[in-house]
Length: 171
Image 1 (tube, rainbow, N blue to C red):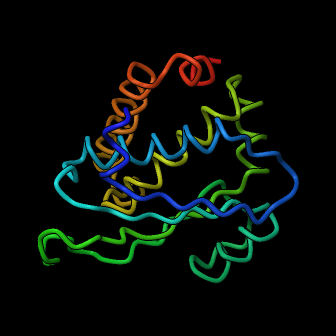
Image 2 (image 1 turned 90 degrees about the vertical axis):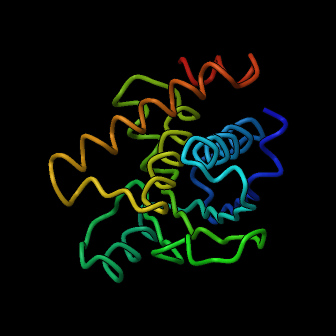
C-alpha cells in the first residue's frame, strides 16, 4: 500500500499517557485513513487528516461541548467542509479532525475480543466516513449504508496491508 502515501497526509498527535501507541498501531491507523480515502473516491485529491489520541476525560469534555452529550465516547469527527466538490482541483483538502479515546478503544477491543490495533483502525475508518458525510444516526437506512461501507473497507484493509499488520487486524 506504499502508493497510498501520496493520497492523504495523516498527522497523529498523542495527548494521552494511559495506553502506549506503537509505531505499528500508528501505521495501521494511517493505512486505514488512506484506504478509506481511496475507496471513497478521493484518489485524485491530496487529502489531509489530523488525529488526536486522548483519554476518556478529555473526550468527554469535547463530547459535552460539541454534541451536548455528557459522557465519554470512543471517537469524534470534526469535518471542515460539507461539500468537497466546491474545492479547487489539486489543492490539498483538509478533510477534518478525528479525536479518539485510546482508553475507550482499549476497553472496547477487550470487550469485543479483538486487538487494540484493529479497534484503532476501525475507529479511523468509522470517523473518516463521518468526515466524508456518512451519518449512521440519521436513519436506519443511513446506518446500514455506513456500517456496510465500514465492513467493506475493513475487509479490504485486512487483505491489502503487509503481513505484520494483517496479524494485528485479525487478533
